[in-house]
Length: 528
Image 1 (cartoon, helix red, strand yellow):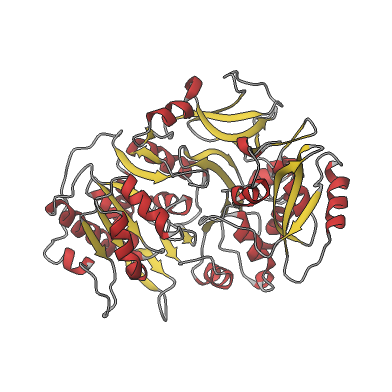
Image 2: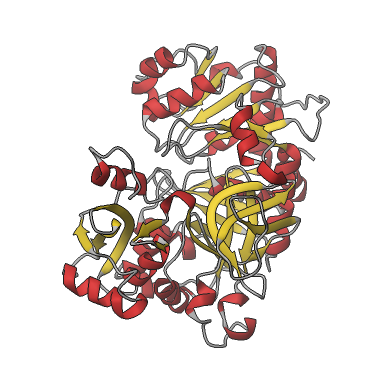
């Protein structure tokens, strides 16, 4: 099946049911039915084909989470185009570069980006059509969505497709260079959709709160929701008060957020007054979560926490940790599991082979640290126009995630660091996530990042960069002593810098590279 077919399955189940709820609309939330959204996708797909932008071409949507952006994305797939996700929180130059390098032919954009259009057109001249989803009355747009589809009927146009055809080409994070185009097939996205449905069975028709950009994991999860005739509630950005209010207001049964936003929810003074009884799954991922804060989250929001691990190149779940596995003996209601279990990213997902490999391609036994590698039909078909990078990522017949990890005797995997984030200090390998976990156990620490910095004695010294919780205080000596008590002096930071706000990417990941570069400026290399 095509990815769009899972949306159509929801339409078959609940044609007049709520498909999308715009929770950022002025006044009361706006509800759109499955039939309304499906008909819109049919009209857009027909207009694309009539404009000569058909199967195999590339289309993008630049918009915050909005019902029209969802419809445009679905229509791109329905017309047989390759969807190129654009994170609305990226810098303009980064998105323009993606449009140009990934050979996009059409861009649908939200009116909030109208002021940037001229600059984007200059940097992405290949694009044939620039279509504004929702122009304001005074917006000088070249073409609106309403005019683009004015003469189109809501009719299905059938065309042949191959399961290995590319349906999505997402850019890699881009924090270490220009984003690479990750080509994902219909088969890969179908397996992802079915795998998520297998590991996340709902007790009732799901209601999913989408807060983070739909261009990433948040959006991928909408397809198993659609396939069950569920409802997706859209918010533009992770505003803590709005997120907390939406859960009881819409009887939300599932949401996905990165740990940084979960921490912000927990720090809100009103979080303990919120009714979380409708929640079945609170999905977390994108970066490791502190065991101490995960315990707090379970205590406050209930036994609903559920982890999935994956990447742009692999989709997910490569591994998953069920709600039950957050508890002793895998039983909800018993004591919360020990910290070691809470640090795991879980066991291999359906249809996935996961292993640990050394640099020479040798698979390592349980307990040894190496690179996490995998084999699954969810792995990309390759990087766009980049066969060398594709071959490198697929060395020895396995996809290389770039994450360092280990597997225990029960089959649980633990991410200990990114390959390039390991700190070698005085001849010892120190994984920054272990130090960050210790720092997070201090009650004053809100967010932190640990990097290696140049040091004449140690080669690299462990540096902690800390963002304190609002109203909290802690000094450098206090935090270093705290870490020494938990993980020993070798792994404890040698110094601590305090910062008002840790730099994060558009999807909430801490930008260690941005922190690290400042400390290594003027050095010939960035290792000790």
